Length: 449
Image (cartoon, rainbow, N blue to C red; front, side, top):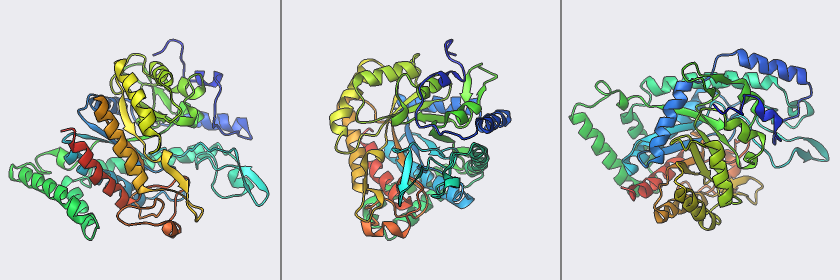
C-alpha cells in the first residue's frame, strides 16, 4: 500500500467529468449505504485476473475485452447479457485457434454505467439541460427531472451489476460455455455468410481439433475446461464516489481493492497525471488500464506507468491504444519503442473504436468496420516491426443484431443505421461484425506462431 495514499485522497485533487448533485446530504447517505453492501467481486478474483494478464504481457496469452459502451437500466435482461457473453465466447474460440494461446476474456459488463461527455449541457429547441452521463448518474430522456443527477441511481447500478454478475457466473460454469456448443454457434454464423469459404477453413480446423480431443477421451465429463470458462468484468472507473464506496481492504493482503469490478480503466479524458482519477487508481490492487490517445507523448506514457505501476508488476497495467486509423502509424511506434526500451512490463491492447467515430449524413454517430479493421491491422504490424507483443483487443460491441456500425459482411449502409440503432451512447459492433472481426484477427494472430 502506498504510504501517501488513502481511500479518499483523490478528493484533494482536481477532478473532471463528475456530476454536480443537488443535495450533498443525499449523496453522503447513498455512499454510506454502498459502503455497507457486500462487494460485487472479490480481491482473489482480481488477483487471478492479474496473473492471467501477466501471461499476456509475456506473450503467452491474449486479452479479449468487449461489451457495451454504456449499460442501461431499461435494456437490462438475461437475453441481452447472454447474447453478449455468447459473442465473447465465440470470438474467443476463433482467436484461440489463431493465436494457439489462451484467451483472457474480460467483459465491459456489470458496471459500465457512466460516460464522459464533451459538453456539460445539451441544447434542444432553445432548451439547455445537463448532458446524459450514463444511467448511474441521470436519465437519457430530455426532461429536467431525468437529467438531474440523482445519487440513488448508484444503488440501482449496484443492484443491476450484482444481478449481471450472478448470471455471468452461472453462464460460465453451468454448461452454457461448452466449447462444442460455441463451435456450433460459429458454424451457424457461417451459413450464408459472404465470407463463408474464407472462414470455413478456420472453422473446419477447429472442428478437427475438437474431434481429436473427443477421440482422446477429452470431453465435458472428463475435463472441466471444455464446459467452463474464466470470465472477468471491467468498466471505466469514472464516477469516483461509487468506486470509493465499493473499495474494501483485502483480509489476506491488507491492500485496498475496488470490488465493483475485476479490472478498472482510466479514460483518455481523465488520465491527467496530477488529477483525481490517477490518484484513486494508483492505490488499488486491481489490474488497471489506461486509454492512450493521439496526444500522448513518450514522457506522458512513462510518467503514467511510473505512477500507476511503480513496482513494474507484470499484469498490473494495460495500455489501451485508441489513436484512429489515420494517426496510429505516426504515433504508436515511438510510444511502444520507448516503453520497451525502459523495460516496462505492460499489456498493449488496441481500442479501434473511439478514434474512428464519425457522423453519417443521416445524422447518426457511427463507425466503419473497414476503418476499425485498419487500425487493428496497423496495431499488429507496428508491434511486429518493433519486436513487441500486441497483446489485446478492446471493443464496444453487443450480441444484439443492431445497425450502429456500417460495413462488414452484412454491408450495413448509412441509410440502414436507423433500422436498429439502440445504443445509449456510442455505436457498437453487432454480433455478426464482432465475429467477422475475430476471424480476421485470427489470421493476424497466426503470424505470431
